[in-house]
Length: 139
Image 1 (cartoon, rainbow, N blue to C red):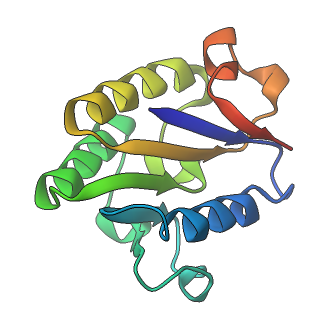
Image 2 (cartoon, one colour; image 1 turned 45 degrees about the vertical axis):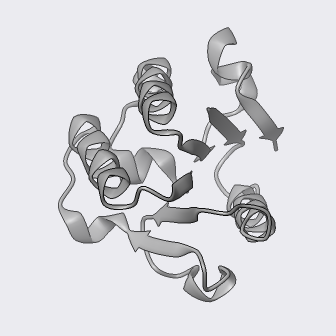
Image 3 (tube, rainbow, N blue to C red; image 1 turned 90 degrees about the vertical axis):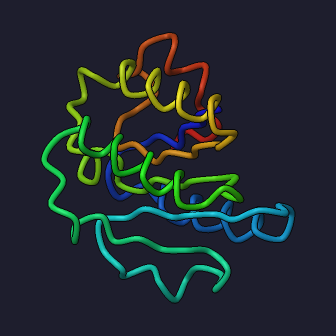
């Protein structure tokens, strides 16, 4: 499953994402990974959540990012959820490819039993109908 938190840059998507992950860690029996473009939110996250600074890994496009995500999943069979903050900067995806990115994340999630919560710097009106159906918070 892929869920989206959408809104313009600076509207507070990260705060909602952090609140959600810190609430969910109390309810899941498996592991949670939080991917971000830096480690600045390290102290905002529950210490049971694994924070990964994606900028350390030389990712150049969405295909490489998807491989990176699959690598994380392959190393942790107890992984239940992944939170992706600053989606476009960390994934190197283009805004026009949002639907294709969602489709690929959905396939990975279904195959390996991982749910994705993604913060995207787009307004709901900029999304396709398909993407709009995945929105859980619109700012």
